[in-house]
Image (cartoon, rainbow, N blue to C red; front, side):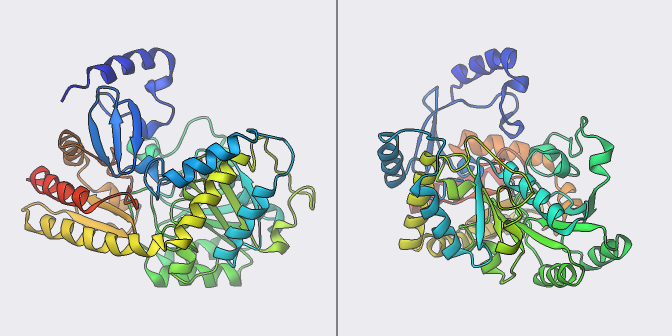
Length: 421
Ligand SMILES: *Cc1c(COP(=O)(O)O)cnc(C)c1O
């Protein structure tokens, strides 16, 4: 496989961009491939190699790359102008759609990234409760802002920097940590910080340590303990939203949070974040209330058009259900292969999310860190050579899209079998 052009481009990029990339997860060693184009389930690099893509831009592309419907919606909007700085009808329509999927989201604000959504929801929770501390789950990733870059998953863990320098200890001291799936630890944490915790922010399915599934009792315990202690429960559904179900993980697991953050899928491939919840809480946002939040690109018309086209499509064609079924049979096929090998591999996932752990099935961050990342990296490279692009880290999630065909699956299963050997 010739990747000469990517290699050279990366050399140049490193002289201009730190680490040669604009987001750390993309810094594949020794160099990443540079993408020329992507369509459906396939991504093509500048040397002309084509891969079946399970990275899927880390989540947004539930319909596959460049779905014709979404493309059309974007072009139609571009003809009418790019950005106005005034309200547009599209943002009301998208809000209405999201509200119809998520009964817990009575009101919402659109922002430009998932990071902005989690940052704003934390500020709002603090404003609403009048308390400063927040709890996050170890290994949870909520974007790259100060309050949540403590034991953060995703690229932060991959590159060994779950706690970032540059964040004042005055900020991190207000971010408490709890292991995933450990209700007792959570109850103790709340007891030890009585009347000081504003909110708990968590991914209901951890997507940034590879996928780690919740125990239902853990989710229920967190819900009841937060309710009893005047703590807001924030579900970060930037990955799971409109994927596990139209109504996200909160619908799938039947747990109603106070606030929700969305992103990725709901922008249809354009930059987006959403935070929302009960009206009583959202009414604290400026100009209705005193909690300030603003953005030049918030509710961007092109994003709204792409998001609306995507959500309409997945609703009409029951895409979540289709992908959930395909996810079950695909994971079964991978599990069967993994079970035959002499090393321990665990194929884990839910819905259209999956991951292959080089070790036992993890239930939390500490478990996930025990996995054999050296062997994983070899597996990643071997898969790539076989024409399959999986996320380049043990701590990321693979995604199925509607565009993945039976042929793609067969080819992947075959490659998986030989790469695990
Ligand atoms: C990707 C992600 C974010 C951050 O979203 P950006 O758009 O990258 O800022 C936040 N939370 C979760 C769970 C994510 O997976």
